[in-house]
View (cartoon, rainbow, N blue to C red):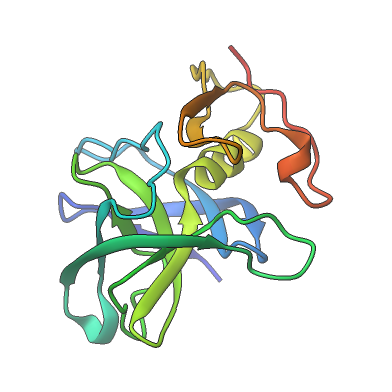
Length: 177
């Protein structure tokens, strides 16, 4: 049926589904431009120990709770470790809510909880997904997808094209410049 997306200014927008990724529990919706500023998607992946805040409307009531990034996990065998885990448990219905870093940027999108922790797609996966869902005929200005922790060291490396070795049977997406 028709999809309606509420936006922070109290308005509601008709929405069109651009893309769905069931493995990572993400959906890209095209909506009318709201009268509010969009959230910034972090260009740096959270590291274990970083403070993070999860938020959502489980049970119809807004709640934000903070914890720390504990680790990265994979949502299934043969899938990359791109699911950030937070030491704060989301409620039923919080799925799709933000995982925010200390700067208030989107560090991930939550989709599962249990045992005192919450998991969600980290900002690099979200950026890659949105870039792959963006209609080719619309302008897009992204120079980098995200700075991710290098698996071989504690340094950060900037990723301008999603590394193929980090993907499990995912297509390469050329990001328009």
